[in-house]
Amino acid sequence: MSEQIPPYGNRSDLLDTGQWHLAVDISRHGFGAWLLPDASLGRAPRVIISQTWHPSEEGLLERIEDAVYDNPTVLDDYSADIIVESDRQLWLPSPLYPNDDDCAEAYVGIYGGDILDVMVNDMGKEKCAFMLVPGLRSFMQRSFPGARIWSQQSLLREAAIQPHDSFKCLVDIRETSIDIVLLRRGELLCVSTHLWKKETDIAYAILNILQTFEASSADTEIVFSGLREARQNIGKTLTPYFKTISQKNHDLDGKEIPTAVYLAINRKKRYAHHTR
Image (cartoon, rainbow, N blue to C red; front, top):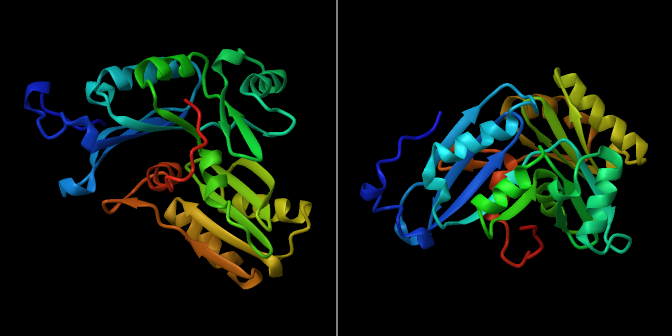
């Protein structure tokens, strides 16, 4: 479902694009878009697009294009952050892959496809290469020139960039998949995506990764985000066994939004690494 925006001639509150910021979330499951006002406006965010569909690569690009063209508000000249939720991402050490073309070639060598469809986030010590569907990158570059394009894993990794005394595990739970980021004293050990049907699948994925990297429960802090009911249930199950377990509620004007969208619109300005 998409919000009904009045015709262009009556959209006086949105015409000053410099006072609004666009946040877009794209996945196999749907398309969301929000307009975030400058604090000086004293207005609430606007939900522009909220669409869901059956996850399938066939016809996915066309569904994304239709979501944009059916809602021309998003094509106005707003500053923008676009999050591409992909379950095929490749993390590479920056010293060994100094330019994005090298990253794209490595990605294609593993997952196949065309290097022109691969996007890369430079996170400093690491780079994240990712794609969702062929043709999406060029469509976004045409439709959202100058926008910052992120993978959801990049934003989650950035959220955990501060050094810690021991292990820190970030777990973001979405409808059918989870992202897990594991660090030791601020150094990245693992970023992975896992499918789940039952909450026990999530617990198993967490415990398996911690065991693989010899992260004991006594030395590990777990931070949950994403679907509220699932993360709270798993948190209650694991709390007796871990040093610290915390829950992150990511809301926009009182409404729950994807973790990556929240991180994109609230990220500190000093972080400048991004892909366009």
